[in-house]
Length: 562
Image (cartoon, rainbow, N blue to C red; front, top):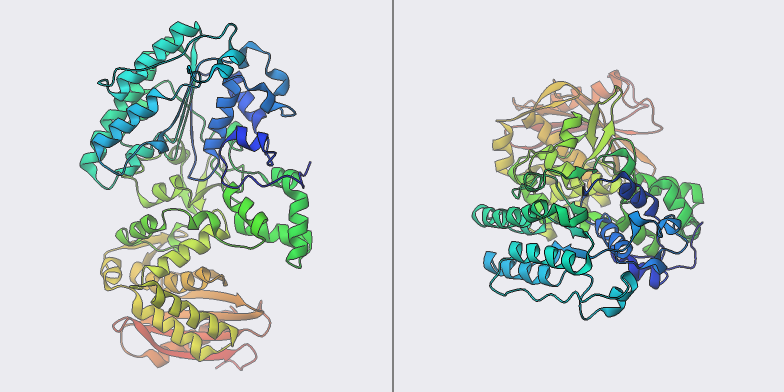
């Protein structure tokens, strides 16, 4: 049922706050109940940032702390009197609250402080204690200040068990946050990793006192060795039963936000069907098991609030980190489309701090899993338009020394397309070509890539993919129809009702004019322009020595074949 009159829970990760303040809550409690029913003692669940992991952790906290009133009307409501769902002492830790800005010692102090105050039942919260136990027990805990965080955690677990007589639940959100905060400083990262391994090892050593563990993070594999410290963890990150635990499926979006979407359609002058199709193309498609697809809740909610297509999720992330990664690894956007991978790639990824580009981008959410045509075969691709466009723009931004020059390049492109000006378009593309860093060319000479099973010279691919990213990053509907090992490419760009069919060739003998004429001729001979009405045909010769467009020829489908 669409909850038209309720507020959107934008950026709210507290389950209690959402329910008490009457925000829309997309009910995930059926999946949570299924997890508890399965009976595993310890679960691990990985998702990228801003995907709703903290909300799931908060929902479990509310459940195990006995706040039954919050679950009225939800799928789990009729299960709350069962022993399996009974309240119990609870340690709830949000590792993103630790301090990673002032060095390792300060981090350790902040972890000790966070651990000391992590239990739900304390002397200062008698109402919660009395709601969970009768009579209420005293759970006041004041550790020895000389103890380390792992020691405090061990003492806390045993104290809670002794005073309550019940095995406890432990919820740890963003477990890898401390390590990733130091990942650019290997020496400090190793110190953090050792501290956290000792910390998580306590959970295994004291397992007889613990009834349930739920741990979230971005990556299964980090230098902390979580799965070595806790080898009883059940990783449900790619289990199809839990694929919809975070994010919104399309059915959930329609069921909870359908009325809002219809109002947005009216505001934007579209039919509901038109809006939903565009909305799906732009924001849908994140998948972690290869089958179930979801919306990122952050982008979906902000779109419904602002009624505007924007790259919300991408732009609140660590774009500088991704930009540096692209530069350091000499990457192009297009080489990450339809990459064949094995199931083991997604089940047991490489450590995020030392993984290859595909694994890094997959674990951080920029690439999603797609099921292949054969059973248990998979590929990677961008989940949706938001990520594809954002990655394209980010790549182009790395070519320019400052943001004003990057914006100048984009303005040239927008103006040329708006005015349907072929000469201005060539000038914009040439401006881009001249800005591709020298280091990128140097690295390109030492690199080859494989696209659709064909090994391609990366130096030529660099021009082609950069121009394609230039279009995509500005929201142009650009696509690569074909690419061969000879460097011939068919690039089609559609903007404001005008289609541009572009053929690129790279020359090394200064015969640019002839090469451009041949490129235009290939468009006609191979029928690249046939599917389109009144397209503009561009044959472009890029001079490899000068790293710039040396010549170009323009034509139209109605011209005679030369």
